[in-house]
Image (cartoon, rainbow, N blue to C red; front, side, top):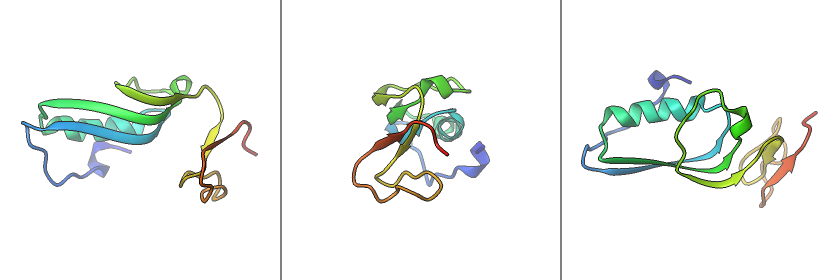
Length: 99
C-alpha cells in the first residue's frame, strides 16, 4: 500500500488524531496511512494497535499504544481471517503454523 491508496476527507491542523489499527506487522499499511495524516499537519498524532508483531516489522512505525505483543503466529477471529477461515469467531485466537 502506498500513500496514493489512502484517502481522507479532511485533516485540520488543530486536531488531535488517533490512528487505530488491528494488527501492525510489516508496517507498510500503517506507514502509508501516517504519511497521509501527517500531510494534514495535525496538532498531535498517536497510533494504537490491538496486536503488534514487532518481529515482522519492515518499516519502523511509531506505535504509542499496544494491546498485545506477538512474536509469531497468525491472529484470527473477530473479522480477521486465515484463507477466509475463522473470521466469524467471536474471540481472538492465534494459529501458530498456518498451513
